[in-house]
Length: 130
Image 1: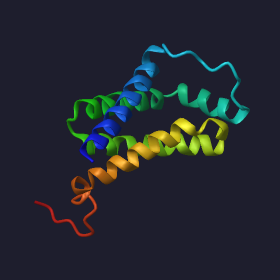
Image 2: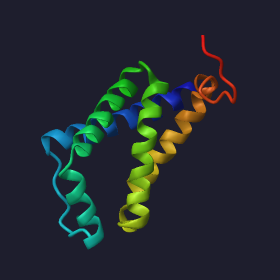
Image 3: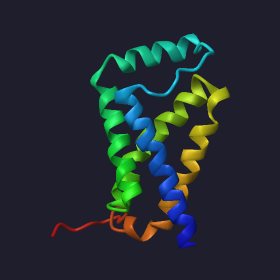
Image 4: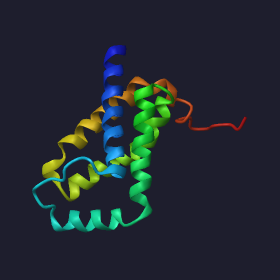
């Protein structure tokens, strides 16, 4: 079980390090097929704001945390909304290319389950201040 969690953590972390870095350095080739109009409109608007750099920075930092093994639950929490956005983007705008999003979603859910004890305090119904 620990080896599977390690493999999932390293795979998810490496994916987000690569895609986070690509957001700053643009080293991955662009797809040859054009995006649908709705997806192109969304991406054009997204890339023109601070949100693109914020998202790519979050992916990079979270990926590095996952690869290093430090603050893994924090990295998973930071990546959760990013992954939700990836899935919703593909479900609504580009369903044919959803496979990588499903892979990262499955890895995220598995790791959240593997680290579930770390999330118990966050999920407390009635938390008390210290």
